[in-house]
Image (cartoon, rainbow, N blue to C red):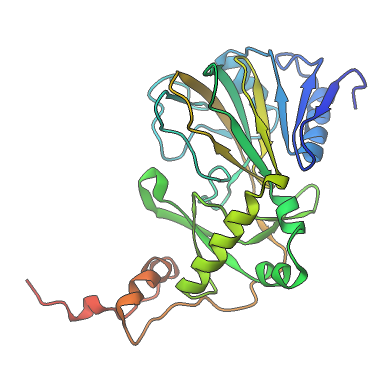
Length: 301
């Protein structure tokens, strides 16, 4: 580790601000140092960097293959490996989420460049999914480790893009366990009934957002933030009415590794149709199951 780097922790569970580094001139040792700090602090902030698009993309390429955004157009800055979002009245990811968790190989890291920020408001919060998992009781840990969850891209208008991931995943580097369900993209616990799934997901989403697991960052123009999507979630506060422009490169990752194999079969009703059968439709479609529903009795037009 470069002893000249300045490291200031920002919260008990995660977050550190890093100084005495130029992100436009990264050596192999600097990249290794950043990765080590990221595994330790989960989200890093580098104020005063003011990277242009090419320097931002070049930085991202040090950490793995990049993707701009799989579902949303990039109407502003045209670059195949960068996504830009401008907002002044909404249009933000103001739900807790891990980037692109609906993909079979979700994002490993996100690197965000604050181009323009409001004079007040528009902060971002991150939560440690490690700490959230570790704070559960032993019976709840055991239950969650045996479950999987369906994620989809419905917030992007493409609910047909979906995948199933473990509720508890193991980080490929640190080997620590973390909760991997989120408010924005997770639709259903596969092994539970709809009502049971709804109850557990609501609890876990509230739990992950517990303030003691979080850090809140007030932006300054020119700051670079980098976070590990495999063990964090984040949330943007929509409390501003000035221009907020961010540019993000996304380092794509691997297939989430489950803490244990699923302990139960998927729970869906394929017979004895009732009004609540509609809640199983998406999961049945994903699993390729043909289900009997009330639609079977619909009159031909």
